[in-house]
Length: 598
Image 1 (cartoon, rainbow, N blue to C red):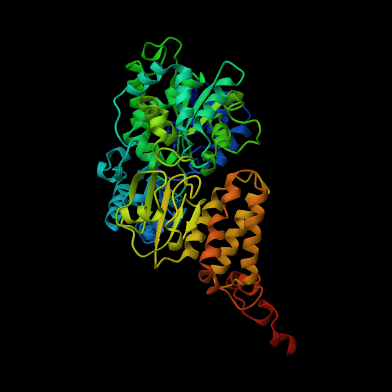
Image 2 (tube, one colour; image 1 turned 90 degrees about the vertical axis):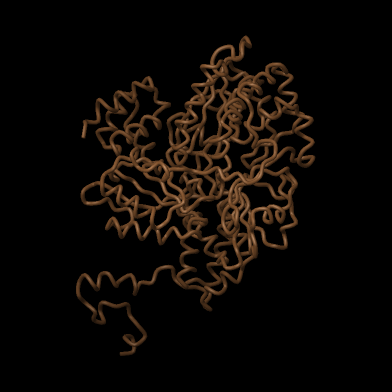
């Protein structure tokens, strides 16, 4: 294998030895060298003239960066709840058996490792996996065998059958957004309206952010436009990490013109000249395609200086890849990551539109929000506002997965009922739907007449459907494990609270729980909601809260009659020591009632 120094030096020089590109440099170094060695850390620190500790902090924060060898082939099977429902664990165990490995173990020849990961954005076509961060959906036993054979043959990933990597859009229902638009049409319309005119149309449309928070997009652009300073930035939040959500994947794959021109329009209105797409690491398969579209836009005068001949309309776009970190979907954490740091949320205020990327005014908008801007540019804000409801205008994309006949992406006007959505996707005998992903809300059949809207049931765009035979306790437990893994560790309420939730749910699952644990779960959930630093901790207990409130028997049937059961069984904990020492006498056991009396 080539030495690290010249390879890493060349990668750093490609990024002008700029520390803000540290994450990109580490990603590319790992792709070339398979892992980030101490020597690579030294080279990067020296090249970028930053402390070694800063490089190490980034390396240790992101789950797709490795400071120990993980093999030439790094295979990660998705383990969100819908992949579980589709049989991922049997496939995982089969792969381990075929490759003669244990979970997380690297083969003795250093060739391969196999482990689990969280959501891969493929819930509509799972079970899915990542092979060196490249998505492989629709896994079957046959596909697992084929992948194992390719690994054993040491076939380069570029020579694996293309069919393995084919990702479907699965668009099931369209309205206005999921319609192709000719390149340049939206830009021309925005320029014709002028900066102020386009801003007025955005405000008239009352487009609210589609990432979940629902803040008016026009107000955000106006705030950045009026913030002091000459430099401004647009950030497209494509870190679609919420379990069950994959609609942004479809927009980026098949409607990138809308997304990229929406970014340029945001730049035009707010006065920004630079934009970033923060693309989640699991969507690496989209990177090359998006880069080609950006290059074509530059060549065609739709990016760069004086776009479409408009004096002073200068705007360009870069792609920044994430490296595994759900928390980076939070706007301030994303900007920290863009600056080459661990993606930990900032303390607010100030707001991002005042102090964002590199301390400059920054607009962070969701993929879907930016795509809608092209609609508004072409048809005007008033027409856009006629769709949906008065306070939730336009259409909404919904990612549907789980127990339904037709999983995929559906577009509806806001105000559609949950029941209508379930009927359209072929969901029958439904016991519950998790709306908005793991951090969302769990609704039951008596609520299916409620409507998808910010004023009723808001959502970032996920429907996870659970049939009558699903154990909602296990659904909540899967979500709890997800949040315990994804907590950034910045604040104690979230760092400790998510771990406590996980431990209690595991204890109940093992049949060692009591009503004490149930009460403790409630207390922890409420404490996290009140005291956590950011939205992750505030919402990480939603699934447990709703499951307890609406499916209490799923918990009760697992409980002991006792009011309390110790979390640690000391007698059982001593068993490994007894095996090692070969002892099984009375002194090798905890004191019992019989030994005290004897």
